[in-house]
Length: 313
Image (cartoon, rainbow, N blue to C red; front, top):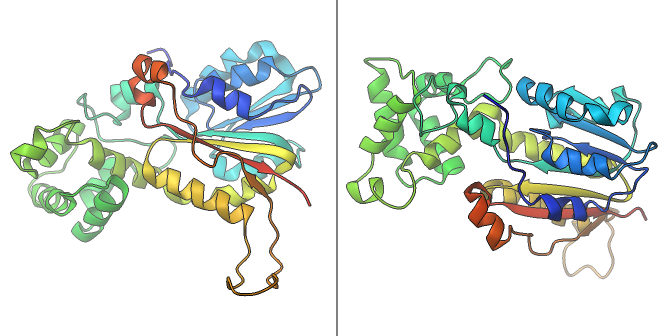
């Protein structure tokens, strides 16, 4: 299966990065190199691009797709949480722009054997990094009922989380839950008919929740944001594309805190905490895909782009 992925908010993101021809840019979620190719085209011989992805198939495909740009490109198999170390290993201290596209690639969703999709029957997997040991199957078959309910409720924002968790545990008492369709059947059976037959697939929220837990997506994002801001040169930009409200909220809160880190009580006449702003939020409201993009690529409909600019004082 060919690695296909339509890059969301492509023009908006590349424009927001304000690429300097001799700058250094990092894509922490390289995928199929859609954004990366547009960045590399704008770099001269002094420019540099670093691509990071934890999916070995993405690394292989993007290495091939970007080979025409030669030595200005470095591609590393890693998680963007390790960006600071990756750059240190390459002898890079600061960069002029960082991009994260937090969506699951079309390749991962459409490649049934990866176990991300509720639309095809496959072994329950959902690991973005196939070298990691814990898969969705392990979560579904070993987590306590209360923990499953919490994950499905918090990460999937699923109102029937408790019923779904209860029925998962009940089912696994007699047999292991091995495949995506087995899990889909349990989810369907945990919902009233109205919810089961409503708008959208009934398993969408639960699958999202288990995928987030499997790949520690929210923890990684939360822990990496401040490091990425600190890696930026003056006027460097951090561009992050999110696809659900949990990610978007983490990014929005982090950007605001880096813009205004002061922890003094509001009634203090002057700041005494000593925490200084690291820059400004460029996108007071997130950039959204155009109507045309949403029509052409339905997976773009929930995408939001937020941009932060580093300002050294």
